[in-house]
Image 1: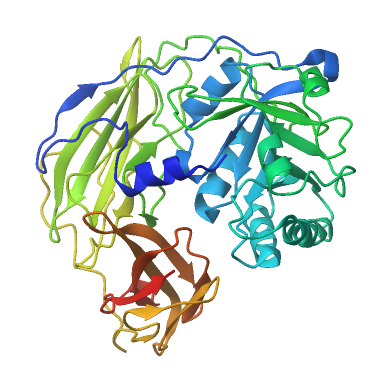
Image 2: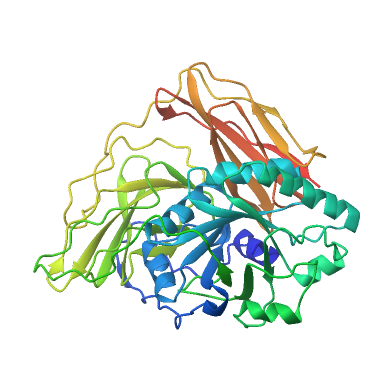
Amino acid sequence: MDTLAKALLLALGITTMGGCAASGEEVAAEGSAISPAPPQAGDPANHATFGVDVSVWETALSQSEMDCFWASGARHVIVGTQDEGIARQQLAMAVSRGMTIDAYVYLDWGADLTAQVETAFERVAGSPVGRMWLDIEQIPGKLGSAAIEADIRQALTTCQAHGGPSCGIYTGPGFWKSYAGNTTAFSGVPLWWAEYDGVTSLASWSGEQFGGWTKPLGKQWASKPLCGIGGVDWDTIQVTATPTVVVDRTLPPDTGAVPPAPGGLFPEDGYVDAFAYAKIMSDTIPRATSYQLAIERWSGTAWLPYFTYQNPDAFVEWTPAVPNAVYHFRVRAENAHGWGAWSAWSSFDFGRYTGPRPGASAPDAGSPPPPKADSGPPAPQPASGVPATISPTGAERVTTPNVTLESSGVTGATAYQFAIEYEGPSGYLPYYTYSTGAASVTFYPATHGISYRWQVRAEVGGAFGAWSPYATFDFP
């Protein structure tokens, strides 16, 4: 599941994304199609299917990738709840492509266990999640086995109080025996255990056995790339739920027409990408053999052609050359009869854009346009001014598990955005942007022993104003 290595890769900006062009270019780049793995059958003898689990580090999942999971034999997807936007997108995509779903919450021993579980349920609300798994693998430091057992009980009690999805425990024999004292107190709770031996059968439990469990419901037996995604875990797991969406994967007849304009664009309008790279995508079109994803960057007065990727699949990952900017993109598909119409444009922020915003961003569909004149006046700024950062305000050492960022209110504001950055090896890097209706927000920093900084802006009359100056704090 979560690993420090994944976090460090993103923190350092080390990705396997496609290259990028300098601002102002519009160049076609041919990509490679993702390929499914040989289909996995799970463990039919033990009524278990092949499933995968993903986290925030895999970011949004495209239809192309989810259908590749399906072609590899996966029928179940387990999603981490580290980030609400990513979790909801991954869950919705899995459901829309015929998968059953679970979710997991990675337990941080240094933070409020009840709050972590409550937040996880909030982030999956409305999704047909079958089980909520308590991910028990974080090294507990100086906590003893009695304290670990008490913390697990607290998290489990909170989970079970929700009803709906049942609750289970994900862990491995190394953690359970080394840190939980091999307690048998939870032997009646469903178990999903990790053992990277490549053996897909649940019957391999007979040679493992720990914690008093007699039978597991699932096994995580590998962590390796799948369908071009590097952080996927491979599982054999029993699932009692049935899919809420049944997908007809029969290839429709050839109509002799070019493809329609793709839908399902992500990021959707207004999205703020706080990661080290951007991932853009659309739904796939039956019989399409290629897609073009055309990107433009907002200069402050006009949209400038940036880059056009051409891919066999309807998505691309890329690292924009210009951070803290607004981009928009559109997609079209090609089949044996030619290129179809372009989709509408979808715009998003990459990092913290603070300049004037475009007034209109949806030109007529057609060929990729030349550089455009000013699309309209910049969006109005709140007349009431910029929120002030109240607490923490500068180089303060926070000693609580969570941090509350507090700002002054702005008259007439209907929403606020709190943009957080953390200190990396060569400066501050984007961490997360919270959108809320209140002038404060509470969060649990994922990384200890570093400095963070934050700023806030307010929305008045449907437009966000300027950002406040940065305020900093240390999180031990």
